[in-house]
Image (tube, rainbow over all chains, first blue to last red; front, side, top):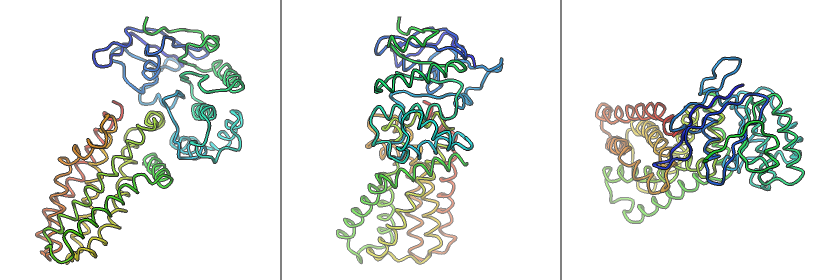
Length: 204
Length: 219
């Protein structure tokens, strides 16, 4: 999977957030989006994942030389960020079953249990998400993002709300993941940046 | 259609755990019905007044609950999550089905209560039921698309009724007229224009909603 971003600019009303960002990244690498608070890292992540449109410029994803159509890109994307929530009134299992079915996954139950165990949430499958601590919610977001084995994983603030053990686990998962996939993360943390192969600075 | 069904089922699951929309819509309907019955009384109003009152109760009750389906997604930051997993058309159809179900549930409670409390006698049940069914589809279709629009704004509550009223006015006017004719035992042919208007409105607003929703959802 290859990402090509050409001359991306984003304005909100009259205010320019960033201008003419051009970069490339492909499977096997980690692209880090850097910048001070309010610089537009999250906006760039949302644009790259096709959640919002850029004011100008283009984002192309291609696999083996074939361009993936924008409306199909969501099948290949896993995303987690502080502003992207799961359904708080439903249990973790109800959430994950809903997302698996709507993504058209088959035999998803073993995968759900495997990921829940990997992220230390085994035994809490039937609890409502609103009863989870913020760290557990972050772990559950990783389960949601990795459930369909996406080709591209977007992670906004990878360590957010996690304890030491959670951070170690997430680094392990991300390190392993980026070997065969494209990892895109927004962060300013120096430890997170050890994973990065390509860096894009916004608001310079 | 399967994905729309999954969105609908998820919303039903959520609603029956929290009952935000159900409580709001049922409470509004019961409070207005009680207020109307105490102020007018059971035997003083004719079919013209009663038909209007019934549709006013139905319209404003629906206004108190229909917007919730999209506002909740925006306020709980799940709209982006939903965008990541499914198409806009399945979201719209799923939400529309939920609002249709919600309105039918309200009507099942309010209409018999209204008929009993206000002594509202229906002579042509066929016209009356058909006007309610078509009217429900129109109200739900218009309400769902307006709910999607206002969920992106900051003044959600007030804006919903203000925006929905002019859009849904044809449903209210035709619904009142059809109910009046059903209550005065007018021949079916006399109510056909109201039924046609309600049916056409429902078809147009739902089709327009499906076509336009992508622009609102991915704004």
